[in-house]
Image (cartoon, rainbow, N blue to C red; front, side):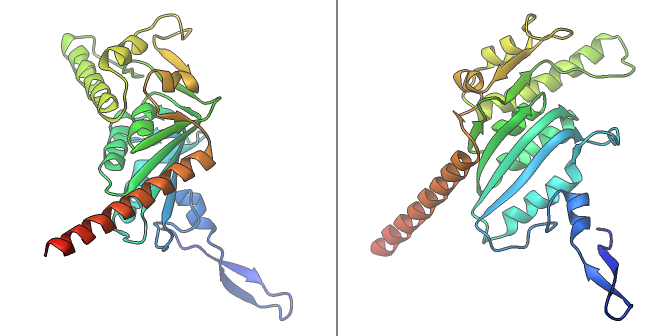
Length: 250
């Protein structure tokens, strides 16, 4: 992390003093406190713009860097004070490997996780939206489901096609494992030809994503927070009940 100290002019004595403004964390990590060290019960992370992987994305685009998100998720898992995580998404998709890595890490957390799609969660953003324990989508938000695609030079041989096919199978497998949608419906949405002008795929708006079983419910921030708090309370009650039952047995 870069040094986030700056020099400030003291109007009274004309001297320069150092002040910690915290802005560097906002610029570098998209949050005011860097890696979480607070004792709050619910942590929030945002996944926005393009998912940046092994190669840097266009500097003119907003991006989410996996080397930022992964340490935050690790810190959330290690912090005993944090009981739940809310993931807010508004992403156009991006690097498949990086997106799946983040999604798998979210899915493997022991803490309760609720995701909320605002604006959109397209392409590799779909498995990111389904990675938690429960998911919400805003009424006007969209999800674009399409086959694996790439830009730049591609060697037109059968091995290339097989590689893309296996990569797509990984994505479909994750989505069907973490949501209620069937494999048949995912593949049907991926290969639809009437939704997108220059590509195959489907656009699901709000309630449509819920009807397919891709997302659990339509709602906003208050709904996502209420659900997460309910899940945390249920888990705490379950732990107390188990401890009480164990103490009676012994």
